[in-house]
Length: 368
Image 1 (cartoon, rainbow, N blue to C red):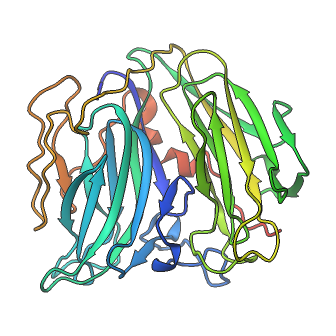
Image 2: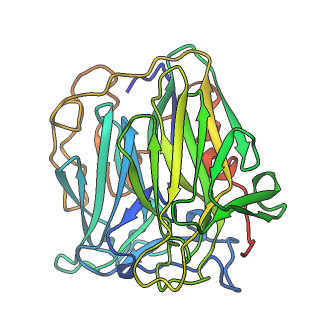
């Protein structure tokens, strides 16, 4: 990691669509649309989490960057987990005999990743001996570079009504002061889409989630299309249930070069076990614009770690993947609630560690 560059810690909540759960039915979570749901006093980010006791249940995340940190619960109810980064499997445990089952803690951190496109998969390994058998995931933080050393960055929000967003198909709108800019756009057309052209080093797309949302695809420039599942984090049957009141991160791309970029999002409205077409909601698009562009070349190393180490720990101790050299090296992989945390960001970005959720995301309880 280039510590002199303008880096940002991007928070990804457990409901965000950039996360992929292998089977939502294997996980349980609070229902954000329930009458008794509240964020007051909750130890979990946005008062939601994903908890499972199913061995092999997993959640995955694709990201571009040099650091990643996972937060969840530790205590007597929790057990072992496996974490794969680009196919390299690490092991850890969240079991704590005297720990609290109701507190969000760092369960894994790595600040010495190569700068590359990474795939992370967190899986429940179940009980090992006296351990519990649960795995609770709260949120992730990924470290991405926004601009080179000495540059500045600015975030610009484009609402769903911006004339630069070109819609195709039938779209309607929800109006509420609780959405960013007071509204959102939605479609249940199969193939309903929008395109947006922009200049910037990063793009974030936000929108609503509910159990009447399903698949959608995103294409950025000439890159291969990526598929996502917009089903609410509660999973469950197709219907008007379990709306996430906090608009979710539906797409993220960083390390973009100078010049014009075009993103296209397509709603895949027809799927199995649906009583009607599924929806896609767009709330806002946020673009990060740097004063200087200098996208980094991606590493081609066969190991996701700077020093090539890929060993882990299953007994709660730190792994042996500490960094011993290499440009941008910042320290070891850390397991299980140690003192490690995402590295401080340069310039004013320290305040943006959780800014993607709390600054860029409006709260909403609107229903269609």
